[in-house]
Length: 264
Image 1 (cartoon, rainbow, N blue to C red):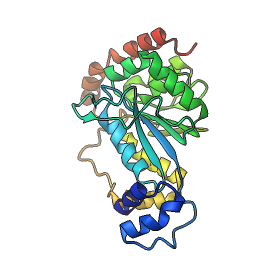
Image 2 (image 1 turned 180 degrees about the vertical axis):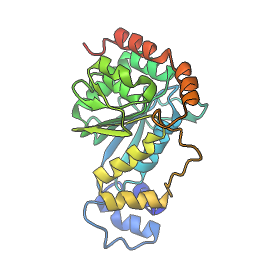
Image 3 (image 1 turned 120 degrees about the vertical axis):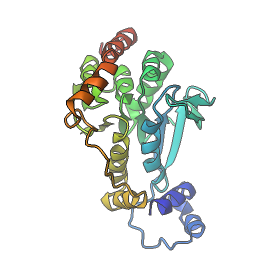
Image 4 (image 1 turned 90 degrees about the vertical axis):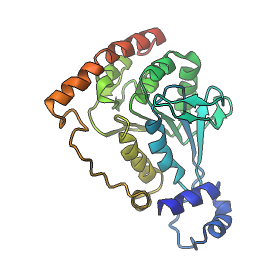
């Protein structure tokens, strides 16, 4: 079903395109519930050093929204490489991105995210589009970019566990949950939470039946071999190893916030 949604999404820029989409997909969609095709404008920030799964998990879900246009937005349209070596090419620049968005989304990372926080042009773009977007969203440390742009002050939010406490430095209330919604701010925790976030957004923008169809179509039925995906469940020795690896990150985030004037 997700494959069907994806094919239709690619061919349905608006409700007027529905007959062409039906023909392309080879399915009779005459019985489709009202509201399943909407001309959503979704902008997903891209920057060098981002974590690619932060972007691609939600992008898969957004791309299944019939009628939606998903923009991969960068300062330029030059290829940029993620923190795991995957290269992606933005489809729009900041100037080319629609001014009024249904969804503004920011992925996370580590050093790449710190650089994005420190980049005034990036912060200004996020602040501008976020001021008018219907939904302001992020996954992982993308929330820190939202915070640096002044978009999380007074909101509950989440991010990767290693940086969760630093959300308070930009005026947010840190919440250790997988997906956190506070009014029109919807934030996901670390990396793989982007899949849960993405399905939540599909349900928000369409309905639960649509979202469950996407989930079944992509067979999202997680059965991990270990129960170590949370600081609440990981063995103590694993927590100690990972905590030591991330020990300096909160301090680096606070330095980046301070330099960017976040929370003022």
